[in-house]
Image (cartoon, rainbow, N blue to C red):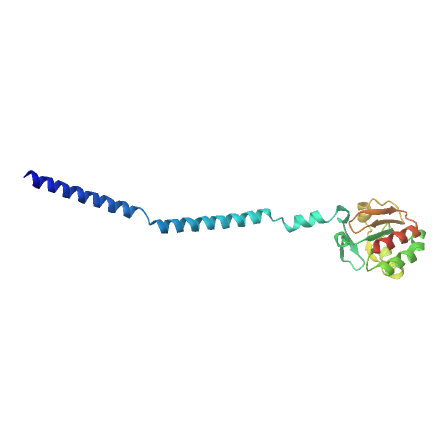
Length: 201
């Protein structure tokens, strides 16, 4: 009798052990599958993080443009045909801005020099006439009839003059390719011609 009870107890204990082992096996995922899933999630997370970092590190195009264009070019004006001229188009090459008025005798005497510079060096140095101190009609009429080869701005409101701090005619602002002012004011013709020749070379 004791032997039968002993055998029954051993059988029950063995069955219980097998049952518990089976439950534990069902609750725990296979080692291979779990490792692969964890690996995939880690790779995806890293890829997402890399994309986020790239987007964060990449500067906006507008910010780059603002940093590249010096403040001296931050102006706009009306052209003879009524279009808009942006000062930023001068960036990257030398430029001569000539501040003149239709009724100014000195300006009229300087027309051959200015137009000669524009004709000779126009491919390398921008020559821009900024007509002012008169109405738009008078500026346009003088520019169209008597001042060829020059890019003309009609600045009857004086905004470009004010931007460059010009208070009288006939005056100049000479810029190098980096937007640095190398000469301004009443620049003598021989000095102006020499400066432009140097900037064009």
